[in-house]
Length: 99
Picture 1: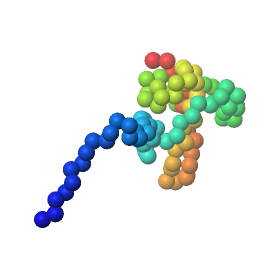
Picture 2: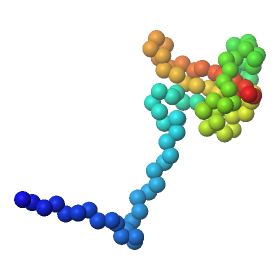
Picture 3: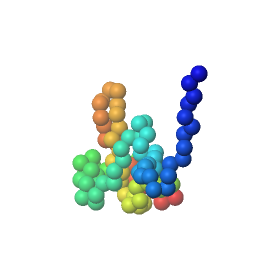
Picture 4: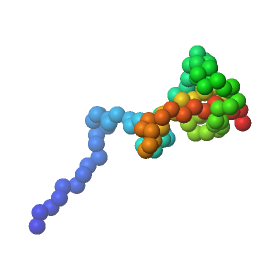
């Protein structure tokens, strides 16, 4: 019969493993990348499609992604890059609402 050695606790002076990065919903494979558009990009988007800010789809300021994007304030436009089975990659735009 072969005996197994007991695992011992590491000594206090041994090297500590680096802290793991805290996971967020951004790390999940089903959550598409979100980014905040600049004022110039937003203006270009509105002119390109001849729409107003109020005509864009909305996203709540309480949405978990908006909370993670700390600079996202009400009136800010987010660009969301989504995968589509029919169109490949598509951009989707949403304006942050003040809830």
